[in-house]
Image 1: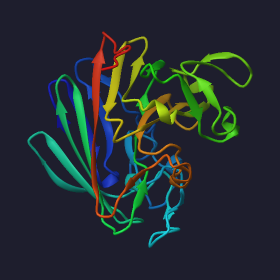
Image 2: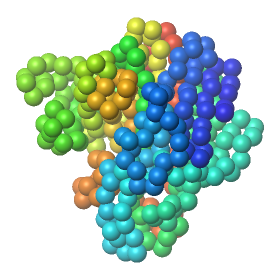
Image 3: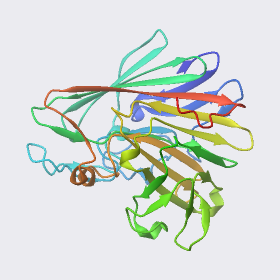
Image 4: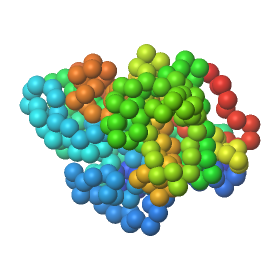
Length: 311
């Protein structure tokens, strides 16, 4: 557990370094979805994500959609599991002291080491610092994505930087948003029936629907925020777009989750499949032996909201 005067978070290293709570102590607002009664337990390697607890904040690496490793070399054709493997493997504790927790994961399908060090700061900030090492002598493309399932019990609005004017559907047409690569204006779009809809709003779980959009690759957003209504609780993520160039958004209005959630997903690849992202050349690649670092900052607030904060 990490705690300050304003924020408390709880991590489970043995369960993929999952964050199971992110609490604003000032308002009592819990931001991460609970499991809805599903047990929190170790995950079998290669398990389907939606068959597990479906709660909290997981790390997705080195892919999100299951695929074969696409790069020629010693790992070519390796099976990469659903939502990657980082969420399903136990992480080791490097240290936990002085307001910091350091966790480490050595890859199973690919030769890498992923380290996450997180700390709390003021006002009500959670700071997650990542370090990725390529332990092989070959180039390594990868997708890392944060997968925080932020609970939206009474509705919420997603806020993005002003340069995000369109988003792209990346899931199959049977989810109701057309074929992959269908584009929609942001934040108000015409759906496939020609009706105007606010795709930045999160509806109730009774809708039994979901959508997955990416900001277009050229937008390179550096932040995303979520405002829960009517309470006015808000949360904002910030990152360096030169290190994390893409942003995905998964909105689940009861299709898979027991409650309405919005997952704001800064990521290093465009599309959820490592194979597809490599084919499109919208991917991040580590050179042999290279180490790359990036930081994700989460700030919580209530009341004055983070509208149009292009900082």
